[in-house]
Length: 436
Ligand SMILES: *[C@@H]1O[C@H](CO)[C@@H](O)[C@H](O)[C@H]1NC(C)=O
Ligand SMILES: *[C@@H]1O[C@H](CO)[C@@H](O)[C@H](O)[C@H]1NC(C)=O
Image (cartoon, rainbow, N blue to C red; front, side, top):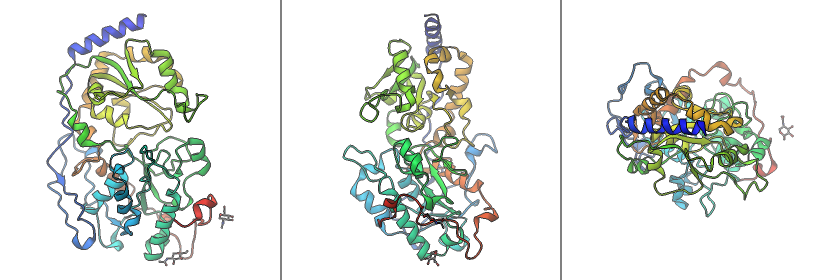
């Protein structure tokens, strides 16, 4: 009870004093045009306004400009690998894996694109591997390995660049729950491991957890896709008091997939519910209200616990809405961790400490909370979490390019000696070897 009353004091204090800064994450200058017509190299039409450092301190990697630091060659694949799949199910444009589609569109008209593969630093293969949705809109990864394999077969027989490195200068966007392990259940994902043909490639993925077979060295961890226009349309005045102390909407148990409990979210979400369902400081529920985005803007702390995977769109939503993310996912590797000061903007709570969450959060000093809120109000921080159309400087597309640029120049081990082979084309489950 003592910690409650302290919490309520903190809450009132903050509700009265806090005026967070503007939520201006949507910058309209420095835009880059993206259009569906920007398809082939011959009709490529680049428009990239006066891109330079946008405010902020010089040398801040968040505001690095990738243009001039790398060149990307985009393979032209038959549309069955990308556009046709999207035509069948437009929902792929809105779910949390949609980064693979928007990154493709972005690159087609990006200033870093080169039509001359001989001068490319990086090769990109546009495969929409997460666009096979159940009637409920859940992505099924079962065909993804065959599709990837088919695309790699195609590029390696039609162009000389794959064989030169067996993919070490190629990058792939794999936004599945467990990246290129292509399964949504962790046990199965671990059993499968990263698709053998992608062992040498750079993987750009939402999944990030240290010492996990589904995250290999040199990968780039990105935020999940959250719809920028929709979020913007729910912005409320930035001086609205934050009268909710802790906010969370989502599952605590997944009875369908984890009937005995304890496996889902490694029990962390269940622990949140069992310990705090009756605590007035905790506004937590499974019901997703229509005011979800507004509520996050009225909250001081937003819980971001692991679910089946360590990451969720809540991370992005919390940053956009200036709600301090409380990250409960041991060993998580956060998006663009080399550019975003997650330790400063968020609060990290070990999974085993969930029963003490109330004490942990009410013990954070108000000045510390204000400091985190001020950092969260920085538009660069928000911009880096989004994949907007049209693209904007400093957004997630640019952070991905910055990540790729920082990996240059390729080291000598990238290029194989003539005749040298390292990948095994017949490794992995037999089912994956069937034609796609
Ligand atoms: C690349 O290697 C594969 C098998 O190792 C071969 O079938 C293919 O023709 C090669 N590609 C090119 C463009 O030479
Ligand atoms: C490639 O993988 C298959 C299946 O796991 C295995 O039988 C074969 O020995 C491997 N080949 C090489 C050259 O390692």
